[in-house]
Image 1 (cartoon, helix red, strand yellow):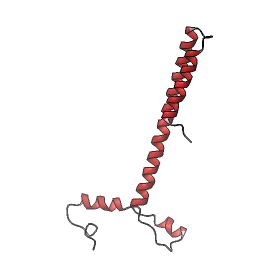
Image 2 (cartoon, helix red, strand yellow):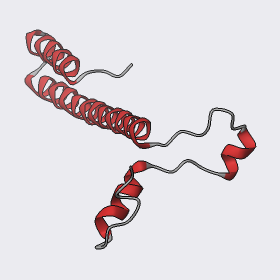
Image 3 (cartoon, one colour):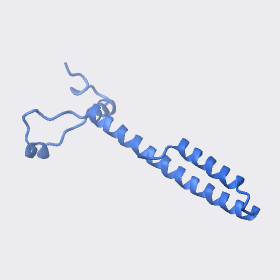
Image 4 (tube, helix red, strand yellow):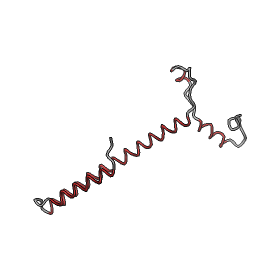
Amino acid sequence: MTTSTLQIQQDLDRTLEGIRSNRGLSEEAKRRYITEAYEKAQADYRAAVETQEQEIQERSQKAEKALFEIPHRYAADDLEKAQHPPRTRHVTLRRCVTRPRPSRLCHRR
């Protein structure tokens, strides 16, 4: 499971609070630890956002395929499916738009 951006922010806040409240550290050490905490949080945040964007794109592609793919015949075996890959409906719609004259693809009855 990916870490949410909110969780990363909460972890950073807790880490910074711990660093600032530590009286045993010098100001220079606190600055160094705070800088390291910010750098780690930025890297984690970038990775979380990238992962979330990738998941969104995968779900979008899966939904588009489910919506626009024309299914094979129910009795088709694997060999027949490989020989005749499924076409998608959006390709047919593009043909209707690009052709200036009416075609039978646009006017099915």
